[in-house]
Length: 342
Picture 1: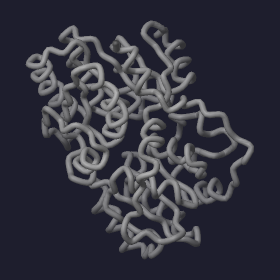
Picture 2: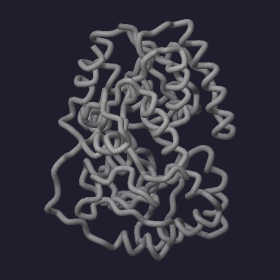
Picture 3: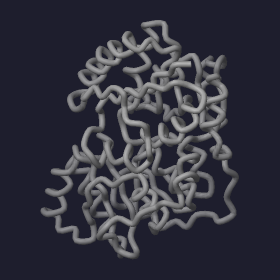
């Protein structure tokens, strides 16, 4: 069977690394890279270090408003799908690339397989939530990471084509876990922070986050998303935050090293909070709603608004060591998805 896989952002490259390895044993896969994450440390390095097949089509679309980016991707993906004529289109997660790929496919009557379906935060103020909900509604096959996601879809009346296969992020962590690399310049003891969502990167909010991290008594390693680089550097300089260490984005193997060896993790990334949970590293998530409520049992992951007082309060809590059952599957999600596609 011919499958067009549409990716564009670093979490999708990680999932594609786990799934493409299995898909290509039985199917012909064409990879379309929208270009949403475009620089070397956000894109190319993942294809290099994870041995992902190089994209067959790179659309080079990045930047601009959500509407502009999604619209341009929709047009360009449609052109490729018309040329390739796949039997199914496969999309991952909740980015603009996800929604554009799904819309382009369904309008051409190409069935859509949505990997990581059913994730919900409960608010359409979050742009990723809009992408998730719309993509789930038009997908033929919905591959869920957890039973919670299955139940979310059921409450919305979506039951056909829904499968709980486990989490490809867990597959990837198990497969690559013995290849971790320590990035240059990392202190022996550190907190890890990632912060990239719109609601957490205004000057005022980032200032509060830096103030909290500066108060922890150990350095904070902060790999900065390219679109936030200038602001983070300016706030660090103006506010004199010597313990907030700014780094360029890191590859997947370095990122896993940073998660595994951190004292605690502070993030607004859905992927990083699961990786912290897999490695038994306490996490504080700077979001109003939990995209992965399974990680919150025993206070291993806690929600916090991006304010100094609340962050420090949550960071002071010790998780319950008696956790935990793993709701994210057995590390064989890729094989299960491949069989379901067949």
